[in-house]
Image (cartoon, rainbow, N blue to C red):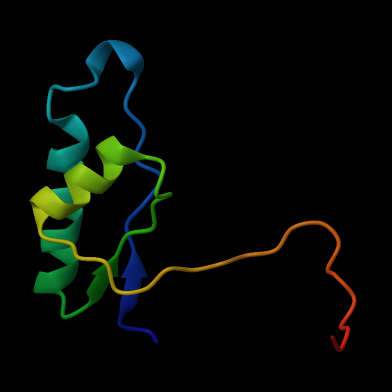
Length: 79
């Protein structure tokens, strides 16, 4: 998995949203990784519509959905 690299934590200040800064950063970082023979990936919450749109515009596509657990895990019960 050495060739798999995450591009993320791109934050845009409220007063600069909608100016294309996140798209430019994601695009450039992804291009650099691809030129180096690496596979970029991008994680985003489904509720972050703007980030999803940016990723799709740059050329990312949904590959899988991840479920995580925080807190207590339910006991294994047969029903």
